[in-house]
Amino acid sequence: MSLKEMVVLWQAGVENAEAGRFEEAVDNFTEIPEPSARIFFNIASAFLRQGNLEDAERNLDLCVKRDPHMALGYFQRGCLCLQKQRFVDALKDFELALTHLRGNLLIDYKQLGLQYKLYSCEVSLASQ
Image (cartoon, rainbow, N blue to C red; front, side, top):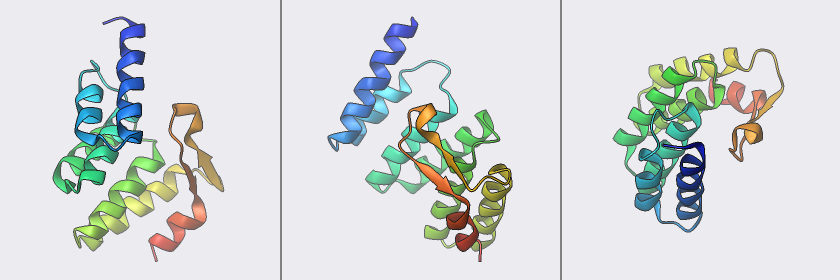
C-alpha cells in the first residue's frame, strides 16, 4: 500500500470518528498495514466511544507495545483500568505515564496528529 493510500485511509478514519461513525473509523484504521502507535491509539479511542472496553484495552496494549515511550497510551489505559475497577493496574499505568513524561510538564501529541496534550499534573493526580 502506498503512503498516499495510507493517508487517505487515516483521513477517512478521522472524518468518520469526528462524525460519530466509530465502526467505520475502526474499519478505516484497521485497513492500514503495520499500524503505528498513533493508529492503535485512534482505534482504541473509537472503541472507547462505543463502550467496547475489551477491544479498546487490546489496542492500547498494542499502542504501548509499538511505542513504549508513548505516555498518553499508558495514561489512557490507566483510565480504562479505573473504569474496570482494576486499581493496581491503573496505578501501574499512571506511574508509567509519569515516567514517560520524562520530567516534562506536558507532552503535546499534535506532532503525531493527535489533538491531545498530556499534563504531568493530570497524571500525578490520577495516581494519587
